[in-house]
Each structure stands twice: as C-alpha cells, then as structure tokens.
Image 1 (cartoon, helix red, strand yellow):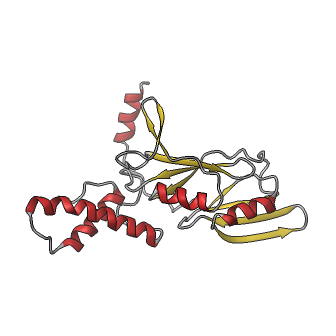
Image 2 (spheres, helix red, strand yellow):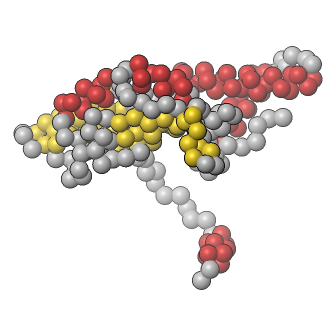
Image 3 (tube, helix red, strand yellow):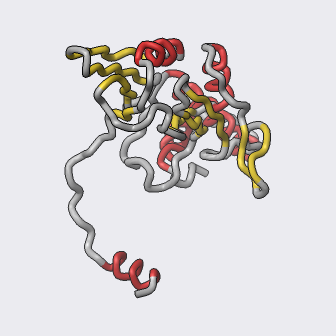
Length: 216
C-alpha cells in the first residue's frame, strides 16, 4: 500500500474523542557523580526541587529550568543508562542571545550561537530570527548535552490555540517588544496612531503563539 493511500485513508477516518491529558513531567539523565551534577545544575540557576535518599542504593535529585513545566532528575538507582549518554535535550528559549549570555555568565561551556544553512551550520543567530532556526549547545560534567533552540512563534498544531501563556515576565516582555515592532508597519501605512493598539497587540501575540495569521 502506498503512503498516499495510507494518508488518504487516515484523513477519512472520523476524529476520535480526545483522551485524558498526559503531561511530560520529568526527564531523567544518567550521571556518575550526583553531588557534582547537583552543583553544576544548581550553578545554572535552575530551581532545586528535591534531594531524597533512601539508604545507600537510591537517591533522586530534581531541578527545574526557569519557566519550564518539565523537570530534570538524576541520582542513584534511577536509570541503567551510561553516564553522559543523554544527548541533545531541547531547551526552548525566546531569546537565544540572552540565554547564551546567562548560561555563559554562570560558568557553562556553551557553544557560540549558530543557525543552519544549506551547506551546514553558520555563525550567529538566524538573520531573520525565524523561530526554530537558531541554536547553541552545552554539556554537563558527564557529557549529557543540551540543545538550546530559539522559538518565538509556534508552528500550527504545536499548541492549544485556545490558550495563550507566557512562562516568565521576560518572555511576556519579549512578546510585547515583537508586537510593538510589528505594529509599526500598519501605523506607517495609515500615517496615524492606532488608538486601539492594546487590542492589536493582544491579537498579534495570540496569533504568534498559535502559529495563525497575524492581524492586518
């Protein structure tokens, strides 16, 4: 059976009722030295949530990156994976350069910011600052690696379009700044100040996050 036939048949199937929410809560990484890893992630400014030991065979340490709804765990007795084998765990940020400066300032050996071109990686953030296009990387002392990716506008289908949320005051401020820049274009066309700019800003910010067309 061809892929086209499979896709067509799948599209013809009636929509199934949505099931219960299943939220990704924790990512577990393997480390060789729990205390060293605790110092490293604490030094990044991530929130320490727990450090629980049961005897000598089990210990769980949990940290949460700023603004994240998913946490990180490591310890003893959590995973049989080899230390350092977790690779390219995504950290999504709204400003790649600000995130880079923050991590570097806290002692992480973070790579230079780069973007991807037809021939491979290129220095610096994406010239248009397109969502999903700018990156940087860093690793913890065991070699578990993190991939930082700049996302300001989600692609359609990636979020609940009925909900607009911001994970921190900085994310909200950055969204307001982008709305202000976008709002300058219609004001240039009309040559007049838009008295309804709060409504325009709100509509633009909701559309940006949902990945839908912005207001005219």
